[in-house]
Amino acid sequence: MISLDELLVIIQLKLSRPLHPVGTRGRDLTRCYELLRLTSRSFASVIEQLHPELRDAMMIFYVVLRGLDTVEDDTGLDNKVKLPLLRSFRNVLKTEDWTFHDSSETEKDRVVLQEFDCILREYHKLRPEYQDIIADITEKMGNGMADYIAMENQQNFEGVKTVADYDLYCHHVAGIVGEGITRMAVYSKFGDRKLAEKEDLFESMGLFLQKTNIIRDYREDIDDGRSFWPREVWSKYADSLTDFTKKEHTEKGLQCISELTLHSLRHVEHVLEYLSAVRDESLFRFCAIPQTMSIATLELVFNNPEVFQSNVKISKGQAAKLILGSRSMAEVYAIFRHYVRKIHERNKVTDPNFLHIEQRCAKIEQYINANDKFSIEYIRMQALPKSEFERDQLDSANKVMYTGFGMLLVVSGLMVGIASYFSGGKVGPSRFIAEFKTFIDFMWN
Image 1 (cartoon, rainbow, N blue to C red):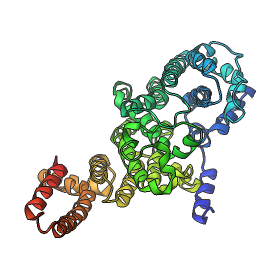
Image 2 (tube, rainbow, N blue to C red; image 1 turned 180 degrees about the vertical axis):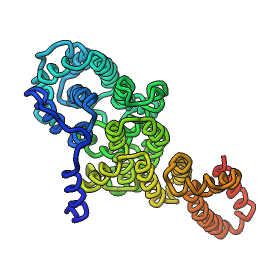
Image 3 (tube, one colour; image 1 turned 90 degrees about the horizontal axis):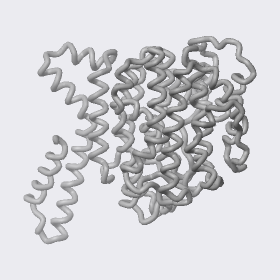
Image 4 (tube, rainbow, N blue to C red; image 1 turned 90 degrees about the vertical axis):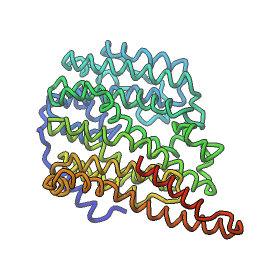
């Protein structure tokens, strides 16, 4: 049940004034925006806020890719139809009357393909530069999806094979989208040119969202007869990916989620660097809101056994707070710091990924503290002499690691003591010192 606090935030969001008023729209354009809202309320709200220079182009970009994604998602569509359609989808954009009515009845977004002709007519009204970007990204994405389907059986519950395959799949379905958004941002002069020159930045924008969603969507994907969790990761914790749906495998499943969480967190610094180079306020919100929702979602799924039973999501009230609170880089830094600290607080010392997560959380906080020029911490550290500043910054960033250090020290001591007792004293202080030295080396290298 929604709380009063969340209800008030939702009302505040509904009553907030758009940055740029919406003008009169024709029949086709109106329907395109309706299709946008039908397929993604969260993206619809941020696209509607965009500057008029980018608003329609981004909307068309999204619904075109939603059509492509609907073809790829349709597990009931024969690959003899699906693969050629994915590979030739760029040619669809050359027409103005194409529609597709062979989607499965269970495919929730099939209406986009059924009414694709109205999208095409509006696509051809865009500036040629935006049309070229959309067509180019559509071709790359369609071929990437087709390559993946050709390699993997869509009814396979065992996920992709390796972490490299995982990254490649996420690149095809999300990293390429980041490229398209970036090219539009640079062309419109709303984003710094370095965004297009540093591929790691826009790639991470897409991969952070996609990897987090893949963790969250575990149960929904399994129920649909597929999964995208990399076998190279989950096979360390179970014999079959579906084992995690069983209560006796929950603990191992949570450890697997921890390792996948690490793969998501490794993109955070690049995400923050990207956002700091976006100039236009409306484009900043467009880029920032999905990222802040993603870090909130990542914290939600971390150490959460509900992932194996249902498709967990952040609440509408929480989403409204994130939308209202993602208006500036300072606010985004604060949001990321908040959720990264919550991940640290819920990290379990018994998890084999414990130290790596502690280290990653500390590095993210160190990055935020060094770049958030509006935080009290940053201002205070800037006033210190350089050597003192560096020590203070390191102390702040490593607070999360110190907690883990103490906990692991106590647990290690107990384990060695117990082992020594049951082995008749064969495990002595020298063994403890050796283990302790290994831990110290790990923490500081």
